[in-house]
Image (cartoon, rainbow, N blue to C red; front, side, top):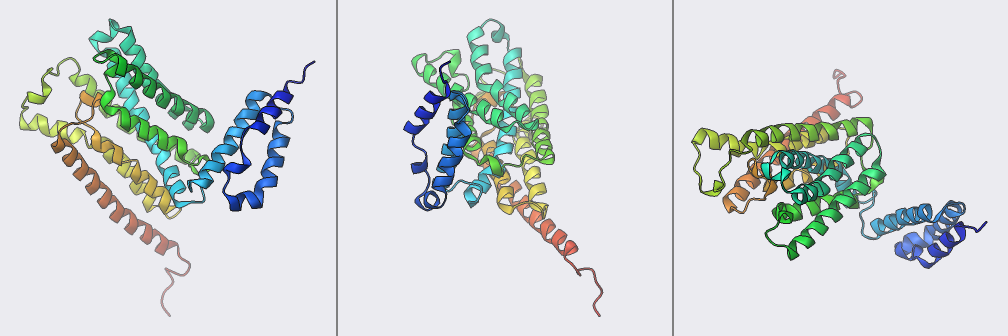
Length: 333
């Protein structure tokens, strides 16, 4: 029988690995890394060997770019990643739902397929993360990013087609996906409590957004930008744009207010609030606002929410630490 593992070992010897690590780390752990890799792939097939090499290469690049779990930037991204995934999955649910219900979807298979290819992986990734399957979740996010880039590239050759339906949100999706991918996996909260918070945030965002989108579906005028709504209706629509940011800000407040939470990871949750600055009212969730008034209004609301949450969370954290400090409640002699 031909040894199927020899080609894998030979392939890995041709791929750079130790040189990817920073010089100081390489000098201290280079031999150990090489020995561990050699032992791991000794009885592994080519696919498993490449997967192991990719994991070590990603670790090396995170150390070199100071995005590891030991670095402040890595811990901030680790705090943001689950809630960016939750937000991306929530918005994907809205897109999938409205895409299925749009009258033209039943007549335009390409439009429905393109929308599902870009959004369904986000929902599946959130389900995987909730089940504790972090590697498949990251793989699905990578698939979602690649699919969106592919659809955007194809749209350049077919302007005006169904492929351009989400073009305005292209950078939002890509940035959220890239942050999820580069966050150090070993620093992401994988506890049952953390996974529950992530799923609860996604559901809290998705349900009202889906309800509003379905409520307005089919009744929204084509020339929405030129329509003047009654003040009561307009107030509700404007308030709806702040709802996702409010949910994520509450998650930030709960993290920051807990003395057991790393403040840098809590700051990452605050980072996950910022993408919602570009949200608009239903059912235009497929577009980013082009009106500077919308951006200023949303940005002001998001910054105000974060400021209030930071003050309240810091006070709450300090109060909890004071109560749990040994001797804090002892009477003064």
